[in-house]
Image (cartoon, rainbow, N blue to C red; front, side, top):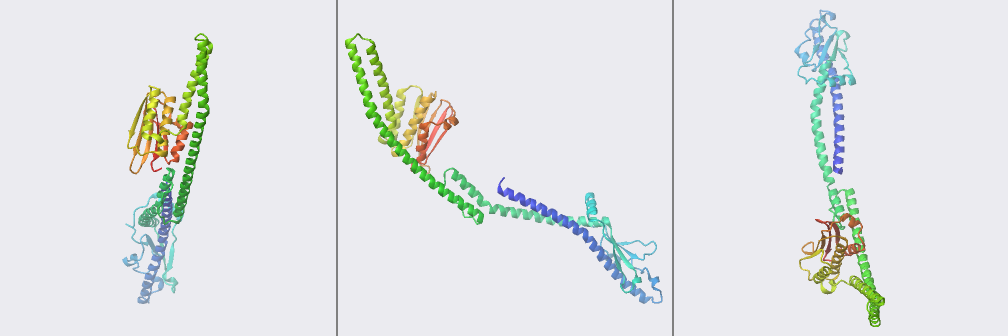
Length: 456
């Protein structure tokens, strides 16, 4: 899972938890606000009744105080306006058949769900009853007793939650959206770092990275850049070392070719001459077809085969003719030589682009690749057609493509994993020039393709 998505998911979980905590707090606060409204209603009604009590006492001084209770005309619209919705007020001592005076409770909110009412009632409990004396100086003036209606209190709490939860939900969504954008913007350079690592995996070690404001990402970017520089330096050193090893191998091949030519070649030529002389001498002294003449003839034939094999080996050990004849002429000569040795499979040569100025190490490497791939195709496959394609690509790529395809079947994966000494040497040559070699499945066989940068 991407880091941005992980952080956003965690942020959403935190927002959800905060929203839940805000809902719980709003529920408790709304439920407790009923207690505050009860206390305030009792206080307001007691103050109003206190004024009414003292006025009646002064206007009717000839009456006993007991005859003033309950205070007349206290159940008025003005008194009801002092009572909060859902709160009921009772005057003590109450008169006969006197009911509590309750504030307006209709339309205070939607009916809450049953589970909400049951949960709030169970968790938060009942509301307390509030009592306020009408007069602190006259204890006999009576008492105001206020209590909340449970159903109305829960309805008020539910309406309070609905009013606040909308605002909280909008704020949570806004915070989640803005924080997600901020996280995505902060981690945006991570994509550049990942892209740089992928390019480094493809061989582009010195990949520039954009500047990053985040300190942590900047440190990662610098570490990636330093790693790329070290890899590029190691690759350059490996390339130089590989080229040096190839030069040493070429020198050894030339020295070996000289030794084979000077020692084995001369000795084989002498053996052939002796065998020819013995065959001729035996034919003169004895009748034709004697055992000595036949043995000498067999020695001559075996020697000629060894000389032919040695000549082919010397041709492979010496510098390829691409360094002397040029790439195009040497490839034509190579294909003609392969065609002269066999009529099956059919070998096609496809040259594309100007190859006249390609020489030196690039030409020698291209010739070696073509020679090795043609030899392998002729030896190890039952191909009926082999195509050797040489293409010069200009422009930004500026490379030479060497491709050999055959229709002899074969498993590309197994061939790549069990590449012999020849393909290994070819791969090393191509890598030394900064190119690439691939072995893949063709339409009905195998395809070996090498890309050699001409800048090398």
